[in-house]
Amino acid sequence: MSEAPDSSSRETQAYLPDFCDARTVFVVILIAELIAIVLTLAAGPQSGQFLFVLWKTSFFTLWYAVAGSALMCLLRKRLESSGKTLAFVLGFFVLLVLCLGLAELGWQLNVRFTVLHIEDDHVAFVGRTFSIGAIVIALAMRYLYVASEWRRSIVLEAQARISALQALIRPHFLFNSMNTIASLTRTDPRMAEEAVEDLSDLLRANLGGSKDRSSLKQELETAAIYQRIEKLRLGDRLNVRWDVGDLPMRARIPSLTIQPLLENAIYHGIELLPDGGEVVVRGGRDNDRLTLEITNPVADNPSQRKHGNQMALANIRQRFELAYGSRARVEVEDSGTRFTVRLNFPADDSDQRGNTPPSTRENG
Image (cartoon, rainbow, N blue to C red):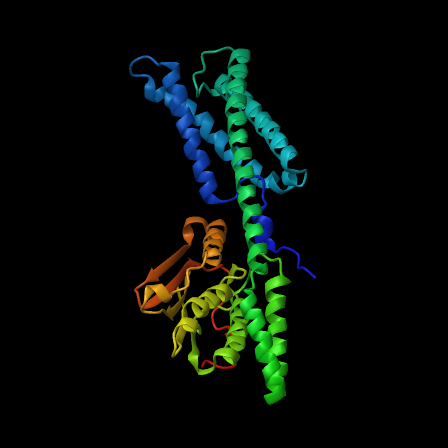
């Protein structure tokens, strides 16, 4: 049975920006001030009056930006519960009503305290402010709608790639595993039974899950299962060294990240070397940053190397970009004798140190 999408999956499906986020509010305030500058320039104030007119315009636009962000922060979940299109329509009218209310408040303050020095009459001031606000809000909501559709298309494409990656169990691996199990049933039935259980667990992890993210512990356990199955076939030619004790095992990472990279390291590296070699899986933490790298030896002769379509690596790059944006990096280093894939990504605030890393049953 497929698992329900986790919170990270729901977050990627959000329609409206997160107005509770400080970075979003900063962008809104910056845009508001730019609009104030444009409106001031368009008004063509008299010489020496530019800063005064800019102050009056900024006073309104900045208050509107802060109040609008706070209101959208409070109403975001309720608006999105009404559906994608209706959320934007309702958001537009909410901001429009707020604009009208602040225009009226600004007029009343000017009448009582003369702080803004408004020269227009009541109807002209409120009507002009309302009209400008409606145009700016409509353009902004249209931009947010297009950005939402663009992000949604990326999410759907990434989910399709995840499904393709889940189905991409190389036939040769499955056939070789079954042949290995068949031979073990005659020589070592107990080990054959363990191999069947490992293969079942691996297939379940690859084909049965629908979560966007899983814990590092789950990812490492899946990779360790794959290692044990390949170890039965390759024997002493395959050695995997795990150095992941410093990683917080509860940290979240896009699903199906480590096992495909380990599979590539074995398939494109170890299998092509007559004497085999060692794959090193190393991870560490530096404050709120996590680093995970997988290194494998490669054949000296480039003609002996297998040139795959690198679908797994491209998929991981896209999902890391979707999950973390510019806060994550997927780096590839090919020295000619060793091939390294390095993942650098932020740790969740809820991550904890001291979690026990998963058992790999054997490191050799």
